[in-house]
Length: 428
Image (cartoon, rainbow, N blue to C red; front, side):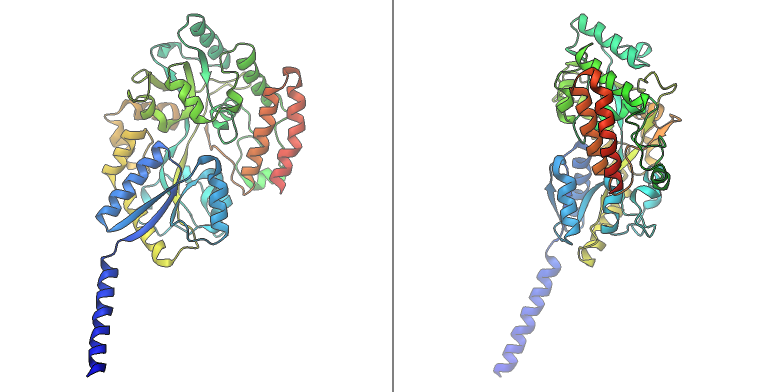
């Protein structure tokens, strides 16, 4: 009798446990960097989670330590995160540590041009990212200070217009942009590319075999790079159109200057469109637009770059977590309402490319992005795509910052001294 009672009790407990497990919410831990685009995308995840009995646990990380922290987590086979922010900058650094995502539903709506095979594919040719949204830098300007027909087409134009506005006490600075490590796009990179120059040779080539064949040679000793360094040195020290402390600025510090109404021009992620035009955050709200990049003396045409931010799944997590993460990311790709809301909040073209034309019918900013980014013939990817790229970027950043913070006459020497460091970083 007692055995029967025990058996009934055990069966009841087992059933109760199974029912509790079935009713308990599943969980996905999301590692990301607080940013308008990522915040909005995570909000889509939370909406999906609420509808599908999945608890979304947000784990924000500082941008300055994100790559190092995620790399440590991935290489230790940790199950700390189920979905992580992924970026083209470190696509090849992590590709072998990430779950292939070719089987995620609805990937046919992604813009494969911005997801080139050599960026996110592993050595088996498998994709390892699901797009979150398109991100690239754009040239922002103040519409209350500069008319569209008077926009700078060259570096010299930008200096001339900036000095005029400063002389008229309309702004404190003509141009402000991030310059520190991991913020190179907002000063060094756009000026370099706009002067028909690049970090490694052949210029504008992202084929690792071609770069290796050239010995990972840099452009540090080339005229185009010296011109870019001298342009920034003069902007800060001679023309004084940029803050003295700008070589140490990150994107947030530069954006703060523009938001305060203290600068006429900046380059920032296109996703800051909504922030710049938010009256609660910006003194220039409603007075901002985007234009083509000004070019340097070594160039004849402007350029644009187009990349994605995405989400990735660590290879080391449990199979059931991988399945759940893929289910969520696939659903996000066809959440047109959610993606449209992300667009409205950020100004980032959504991952579903079919939505671009729909949004553009009623949205002037989307039409302007098409004009100054998507329709520009000369397109550039914003990074290199080999595992050593973060180290190369660091070596480049150290070199050009040293050049612009020293004496002007020592710029060629500083660049030359950094050339070997950059090449050695690529070869490691």
